Amino acid sequence: MGMGDFVVTNAPEIDAERSDVERLADAIRRSPGQSRHYVIEASGVADRRARVLLKRHSGQLWHSRRGPHNAMLFFPGEMPPEDSTECDGDA
Image (cartoon, rainbow, N blue to C red):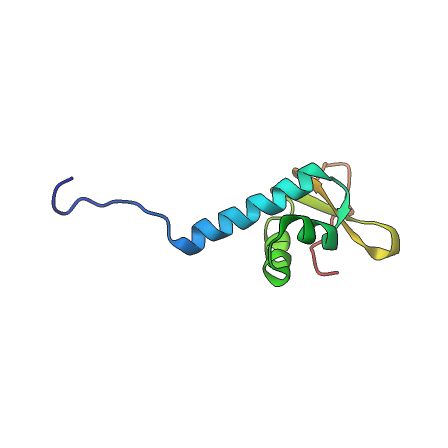
């Protein structure tokens, strides 16, 4: 590489978020239809951070629906088009 060449690297924060998102997605894929509490525990991501990421990526990498006792249940993938009961992650 010569002088002035631009090298793209990932900031540690971006790598950490990508890792946390993948851990959440893996937990949802392994056990679809589980509660937010279960997904967070299974992923090992810190509670507050997991809640933010679950909401941020809802409808893209996973979707949620209300379950018994108003629980938020998570499923892999985007929201199926015929289902209009997706949650935004605030419960």
